[in-house]
Image (cartoon, rainbow, N blue to C red; front, side):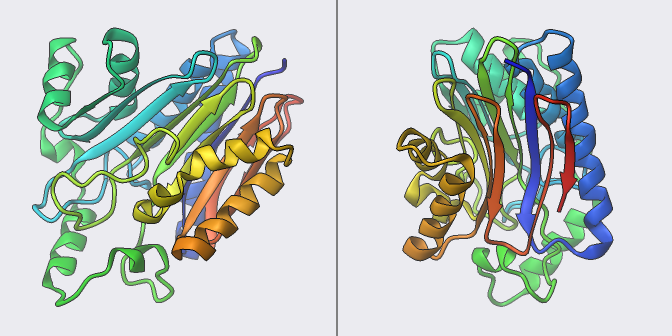
Length: 304
């Protein structure tokens, strides 16, 4: 098997002036992950490294620069999954961690659990000597001002953020990556700061196995971005893998699942897919989706 990787930086109505930043961020993350695959590292290492790059980039809604919740706090969610044994680790509503994807991997590899949340996840991070940061390390002035603006509104609907045709919210996207290594192992990771002005403790689709992320080396891997409350209702990532199991190709399964999401629950999302033989696809029902990929032949694609 020739290594391959695909990453995304969110699906929403990305303004033209932000296209280059999104493409550059996704390309940088993809190249970081692909370089590890080329050096013989595994798919888990590749997706973790790619997502860490995106978590450090305030262009995206993950790690540094994430949206603030209704209390003006940064709460982060992430998941990482290995498709050989269906192992995964996840964290949700965790604070003071720049790289929740790395914490999620530690949950998978260093505990008998699959998910830790909130203060418990933070205590675990500190117990394994993971570096933690103060709020200013995660907060940007842009997000603070956005939070103040939203709080001043009389009404605010979460769905509007993902279907924002007049540019009120300057949406940023959840991030994710899927990779296959030379041994045929597929791994996937997803990381997010959630939605703006969410209630404290809100958890979306991103860290939930089968919803915002899934990997099965016998079938393929998926990472999802979009309106979490709709994505959770249809278990979108697992649905795409089930489509592959039914014989649909990667494009058909991705599109069928997005169409079902929209028809069944009026949902909005974007997905990336990588199959067990290295084929890749992405699909979305928002105006744009940021992504970058490198296939097994070394062909690079960067697009919005």
